[in-house]
Image (cartoon, rainbow, N blue to C red; front, top):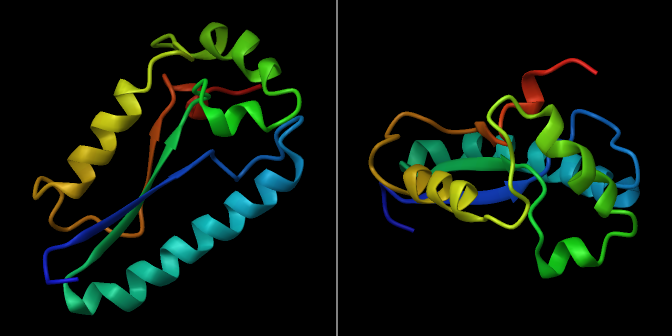
Length: 122
């Protein structure tokens, strides 16, 4: 990848042990750590590495997580900005922005696109 390139991945905020997320939460925690190491190792080559922590989105992958509906039922109520599990556009726009040249000095970051749930207490 040439200098100025960007790598963007999708995660689901692994700093919490979410109900029903089980093994996927462990995998996402490892993914978030990997992102930090990629940022460290690829940064000197001018390559940025970031993640988008999206709220629950009704996707094919989500269907494979038993009990995923539990997130769908409460997320919109907890999100100050609201949340539509059927709308992937906010997460997609964040990915496009991070891949663009609008974030030339951002790497190793996790951008939350979850309606604000990450900032709310239990």
